[in-house]
Image (tube, rainbow, N blue to C red; front, side, top):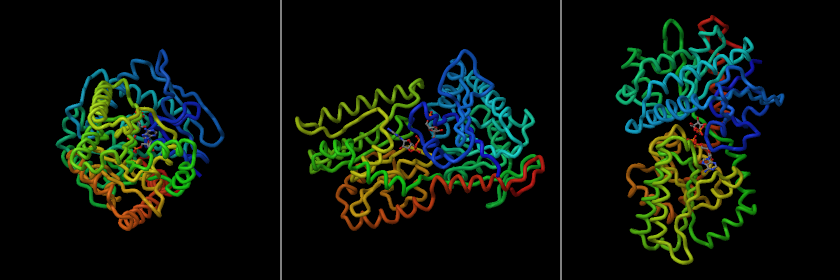
Length: 464
Ligand code: ADP
Ligand code: F6P
């Protein structure tokens, strides 16, 4: 059987401890029985490595490269997270383009290609993840690599009118078409990608058909990511009775409990969510003293200026809300910027009557699925979900809101807090069924099947 080689910027190296982020969470368990995973070590060195360090376990093996400080700034902080991330999350006003960063992006992709080429076997299936590594297929082909290569974008895509803001927009699209398979989280992202193909390259895709680009077929499709819902449900049940679960329970003291769990990222819509909570206490006085909202916002990308600015804003907003509404024995908003273990998160979700997932844009948003999975089916909580998260295409039994309208979020919070048990059970049952249908394992299987069945430019057989 062909070996799977995963390539992503972030790798879940056991020695590094957990880092919040959907990509590694989804893939780690599925491939624990075997694969090679290449990515950044998380370390800075004098020079960016072009040969990987191997961390072999015999099952899921890791290969890592260090980045130079300059490349980290240009590639990761710069082009990836100050250009592509804001662009693909519909925030062109936050885009900070710099040609040196763009050069850094290219040279780090070439370094990945060199490091990977040394490790490859002829029948390896190469699966590249996310916006950091879009030019990797082209860089690998330039080194003579003939393997099948797939690309999955974990974040949204944008229509041509937005994509055209990017210097080198057409070039980046061509880089995407250097893959054999290109996957998106949601139909809307695929639709927007097709809009770009039509506008920039005059390519019209027939639904269900591959694209033909420079004489090669490129499969373009959606592969929605998921979680192992049943395992997460078991973890939640167990963790609710843990020491941390017990401490949380005691501290809530019988009040209604709402939770938000996100990376501290401007795409997650946190200021609007805080504002909405303030309105809730303003407009619905019956919730004063009776509700506690815990926001766990794990610090993320702290070297990117916009993330520093957001943290200041949230620090200020949380202080303002608590200053205005808290009483000597009640703190309405608990805001913490540390990451929490997955087991504890599961237990916390289970205790929450309301799960708040209100991103301004999101590829999928796994937290929405984790919240649903963690609920007690006999007394489930209610998910409040942004219509602009990929998850909303499927999870239609959540209370769906527009995250740009804080008052709509407020109304959803109120509706969720007072929702009768029958309705909660009914919605939860349908949601749980959906999250069991599309899992991390089914996502990987579907993508790899598409990749294994692809005829490549080298004329390799179509089945394996
Ligand atoms: P993204 O990939 O943009 O971070 P997702 O919601 O898809 O968004 O995935 C985030 C993953 O990281 C989830 O599995 C979630 O549980 C985890 N996570 C998010 N925030 C935290 C946090 N504050 N502490 C611990 N884990 C977190
Ligand atoms: O899921 C989107 C994503 O950008 C992943 O690629 C990434 O691993 C995760 O968010 C967390 O971000 P970072 O790796 O920059 O900490």
